[in-house]
Image (cartoon, rainbow, N blue to C red):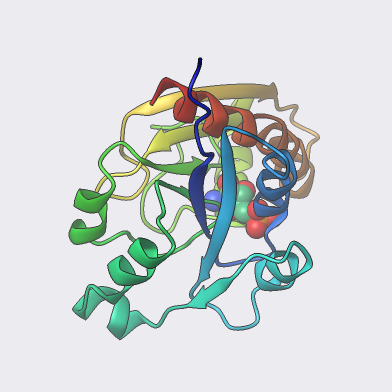
Length: 195
Ligand code: GRF
């Protein structure tokens, strides 16, 4: 008889509105592959916290000192038996101790085609404004493993969309976000299945 596996536990780290986090929660709602069992945020008023509450998912607020000067978050992740971490719009750099605790088990999404338009300060509207200013013909999104540098780990998946000269940064952002919503949950699922 085949042994039935328990779904893997996923923690989402997010700093903002949480539209990607919502897609991930919805995708894994009744999944046998994974389940979102914790949401971590560095902002008390982040939209993602209300979304977690709607889904009955526990939340954890972190502060800068605790995150960088202690390893307390490891205890929280352990308590919730977290197997995978998805960064969905989480703006703080992941400290080395946390990268080491989740080797190739922590994924980030970035709203551009890395290695272009990535690195410190390249987040949110800054990315799309830089894309517009550069006059490139396409942009997109990248899902990659997390290492100790911003937007730098091994790339797992990229998807692109065209940019026309008339597109505003807001329009570019909308097109990219649609790609993120479409591909982030399924990429997480594929990576979990691959083990
Ligand atoms: C996304 O564009 C993601 O790529 C970036 O931050 C944004 C988060 O948006 N890292 P949301 O909070 O998921 O709506």
